[in-house]
Length: 137
Image (cartoon, rainbow, N blue to C red; front, side, top):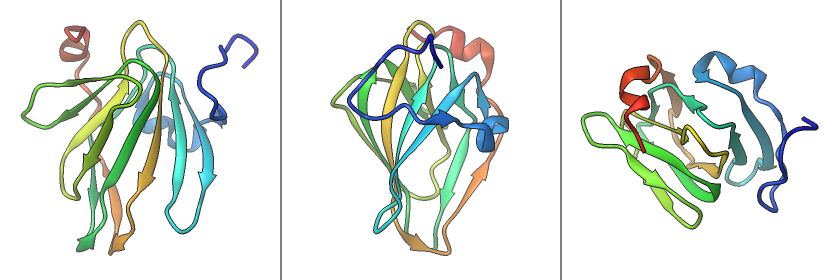
């Protein structure tokens, strides 16, 4: 990590090896709080993004993203991608297929909060299509 720039005031964390199979590129994960709301700083190297995924819950649930550094994207299935920059907030309801990650030419960090819910689970799906991602920005 010696070539990793200092980004925001939040810690970079460790390589996100436990979830590497759900990402294209390198991401890092820094736990900020586990209770009462699991909160993590997620860092994406340029070009890194996670696979399409869905946060399921029978009640409550979903995810909240607070962008803190760099430039990235968020996209819901069937909708155009939204560019993200520091200060942007994304509320992701349960049951919505989506992805998020860095722009091709920028590191990107967001704080991710897993909204508590009943019967919560994450369903990881297919990678984001390289051709469509390549057209962003």
